[in-house]
Figure 1 (spheres, helix red, strand yellow):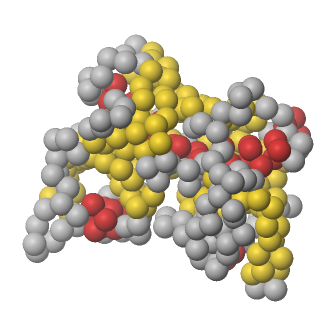
Figure 2: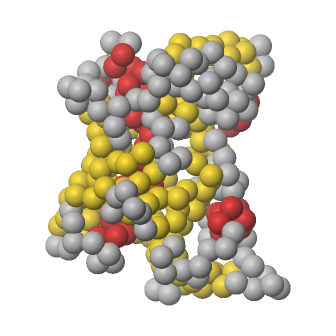
Length: 289
C-alpha cells in the first residue's frame, strides 16, 4: 500500500489515496502505521476518497484507531496532495468531511502548494455527546471540570469536533501530559474532547498547546486553533484576526463578518513510502524516495 507522510505545522498524518489503494481495516492500520517506534509514526491516518457531494472526501482515524470527524491541519494537507498529484486542476476545492463540506483555497508557487486557507464554517451547535449540559442549540458553553483537586474553567466549542479551551498562566510550563488525558476522558464529555491550553500574549497573539483525543499531545491542532480563536473572540479577549502560536508553528485564524472561521497555514510533504502487508510482520515500511 503506497502512502505519503505530510504535516501542517507539525501535525503529521499518513495519507492514502483510497480510490487507488485497498485499505480493508483502516482502524487497525491507523494504530499500526501511526506507532512512532514500530510503524511510520504519525498523529493518525487520513484516507482520500471519492465524494458525491464534493470534489473529494476525507476519512480520518486517530493514532489510537478511533475515527474522527475532521482535522484542520489534515484538511490543508489534502489540498496539497490532490493538486500536486494532478487529481485536480482546481485551486479552490470542496472537501467532504463527517462534519460537512469545507472549502480550501490553495496558494500555488511554481506548481507546488505551500499554503492553504480553509473555510471551516461557523461554530456548530454543541450536541449533548460533546458535553452533558449541552442542549444542541448553543454554539458556546462555559464549563468547569475538577481534575486532581484543581478546578479548570474553560469554553466548550464545536468546530464539527469537540474542543474545551482553557486559559492557563503559561502553556509551555503547564503539565499538559498530566491533565490532558484526564480532561479528555472526563465524564462531562461523553465522546471525549480535545483540550486547548492557551494564553493571550501581547499584540493579539495567542499561545496554544493541544491534547488531542485519540492522539495525545500534538505539535498543532487546526480545528483547536479555530476553537481557541472563537472562544477568545466571543469573550472580547482578541480581535477578528488572530495569529496562534503552536508548538509546530503559527496558524492565522480570521473571523468573517458572517461568523465563518478561516484558517490559513503552511503544508509540507515529508516522504512517500510503501506499507508492506505481511502476516509475519504487518509493521514494515520501505521508503520510495
